[in-house]
Length: 258
Image (cartoon, rainbow, N blue to C red; front, side, top):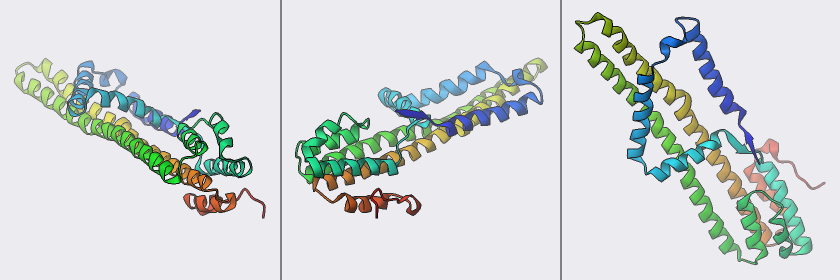
């Protein structure tokens, strides 16, 4: 079950809200609406993206982009508690008891590890398999963050191109004073659109995706270490102390009574 990331929504809404307030307190919103300039920036930005990346990668980036707005609630502390419970169950009932547990968890990665443990795979095989999956997850997430970073680089450039278009149109029609204003407006607004898209949407989303990826990889590495301990029959107390290395000192609270 995924949860809305309130920080992302507040950040975007707050940034656009403050900009809108500044605009409305001056000349009014309609002065800053130029569909021609918007088409130049958005069309040019996504056109350049299609040149840079294959179409499938661009489509996958949109799916990865959802992670900037949605995330799984489970924390490393909660993951450790779940792994300790499974370790205790495996010591009491045997590794085959973990097969039924695969239907109790929502994390597909954890379910895969439990199934491999129940099937009796060697620890080295489990480690190699799950490590490979972690590497693929990192690659997918990195590519998604890179695509949004590329969008953040292209949009200001497209805004500058729109500015040059507007300046050329203005200089070519200096004899017609009525054309100077619209051309200059497009020249400036395209730069504004490109800067806003890059610095309020694309680059912050790239940063958020990188943070999400690091958190996800940390949890999956934690699961891997826990599953190795379960498969080797390690004492749950020892296993807990080992997994506490993934937590900040203030979060290290034992489940076992002293």
